[in-house]
Amino acid sequence: QVQLVESGGGLVQPGGSLRLSCAASGIIFSMYAMAWYRQAPGKRRDLVASITSGGSTNYVDSMKGRFAISRDNAKNTVYLQMNSLNPEDTAVYYCNAERMLSDNTRYNYWGQGTQVTVSA
Image 1 (spheres, rainbow, N blue to C red):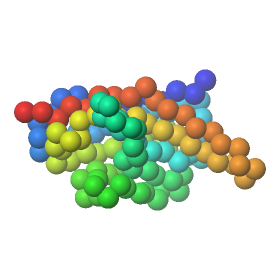
Image 2 (tube, rainbow, N blue to C red):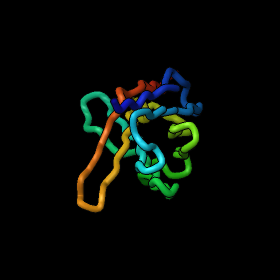
Image 3 (cartoon, helix red, strand yellow):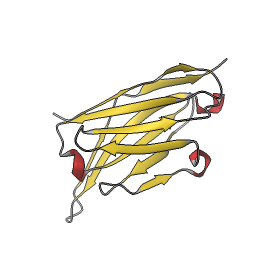
């Protein structure tokens, strides 16, 4: 059974920092591309950052320089370091794991989400 369990969310003041973690089980973690998405109330779920199985990272432009995604394959965990947070970053943050095989079979899994609230 595949599980992605996020943690590290909470309430933080504007300008503050949080580090989210996503612990994976039931998959060969090192073979999966991992990503963080977020969904604010009434809005769609959007990509925040991604990291390939090889460690290459990609960020949405508005996150560049503030957020950093990383992975520890030994711990089956992906992280999202978030700095200089502002109220617009308030959302539920979701972890995603994806693997595409050579025959185009796609495996895609989601965590349950962790709430991040940025407020004074």
